[in-house]
Length: 554
Ligand code: GLC
Ligand code: CA
Image 1 (cartoon, rainbow, N blue to C red):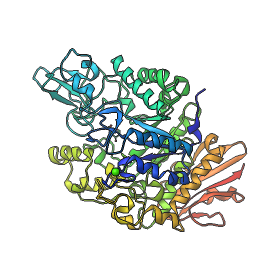
Image 2 (cartoon, rainbow, N blue to C red):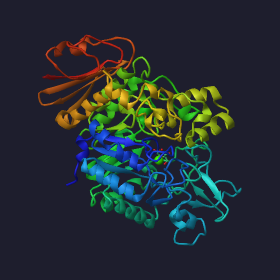
Image 3 (cartoon, rainbow, N blue to C red):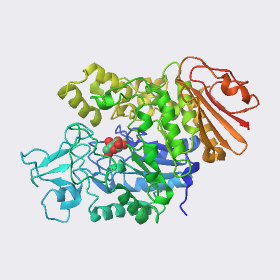
Image 4 (cartoon, protein in one colour):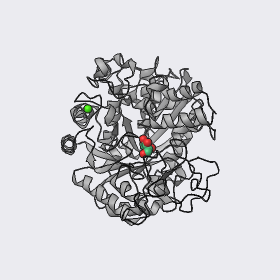
């Protein structure tokens, strides 16, 4: 039987570059993670997902791997990694590594050999195609980072495919030797003690080898759910994930609740959970020429509908991965909440909603102290996605002005979540003694771990409480989910029920007071499980971003 430890667990995501620097080069490192394990234990989390620390030219911050068997010296050594795994295990914290196998770096030895000729052992490790009859790209597929998904290679005299930067060529999963090489790498890390994988864009690994054009040139519509995706994932499960008992959470950008069980129904032996993007697009204008940079006010009715869909669909045939933040997402309180006047209230309100759901909650570093988006000038950002998209939309297409692009950057750019972790009010937020690789958010003087730990209203303490509930209350694992007030624009409310016991989870996602008489009228005897206002009695009106969980008997 597969060990399903994650069903009572909360997983903490670390972006190593920005977590804690211990050798004063301005870059976080493995020793830094180890140093902070007691902090993480105090928070109560059960596992760490560590973003890529493999040897990499860092074109996409480690999502371009040169050697799967080496640690990038910037982060430390393999010995540091072994020590970190041991130290974490001693504290009962599991380690989940990032599995980036849709693509490698162009500096990876496999690619270096592959590009040499059409008939060497690595020729078919990547996706090579001849030029079109006019000498141009094989088709109109686009890269996520702007421009075409094809780059010409002089040496081999062919184009290779890359869904991301040209320095990130896509692997050819059709080739059984590629799959074997990947399985071997997974086994290596299992032997070092790694407990599971977060699988980067796993739903992109299978390609349509007829290479049909997309309806819109340079779009990325072709990238998801290719013809052999399920077969490849199932094969990986039966060869590695199952026998080695490694947990797997896949990144599945286009997954909708209705088709998610194809990936996570345990009887299909594919993945344990997936990260959908669906609920994160509630502030994106649909089908706009400016893609992810075309924003609108967050639609909380849609948020509720989507999360509820996922709860219902995966209720008995799968498991949800729950998140609002990660290294590709902005800070949720800056994006959808209020990161100034109601920073504490909105941080805890979003946390309550998420952690009350059925599934495994993920906490992204800094979320537990309410870190916010910085508002930098364009040239202070470093992310390749932002730069590539600026070139495409502002400079080439000219469909968005620089000002509007920057406004969108302030809301949703990936660098918003990548600023250094704010540990204290010391120089560089206590992250490093040297100048950090990415500017520290200037609000670190007020917003930092040390001050939050001592605050009367501590976001950390609230997360601690939520995490503890996950460990001690079976209703969070098993309870049935039912959405209330589906059409209310600001109140997010639902129940979790198990036998006689019912929990009411409520949050006001606005600054205006909201009447909840109808919700609480029958629950006057209820007891508090958690709340972000210091109430004695159950209120009939919710204050700005007020949120709580109440337990009652049915
Ligand atoms: C995933 C990662 C992202 C990366 C991309 C390419 O979406 O989360 O950070 O840029 O894949 O590997
Ligand atoms: Ca360092």
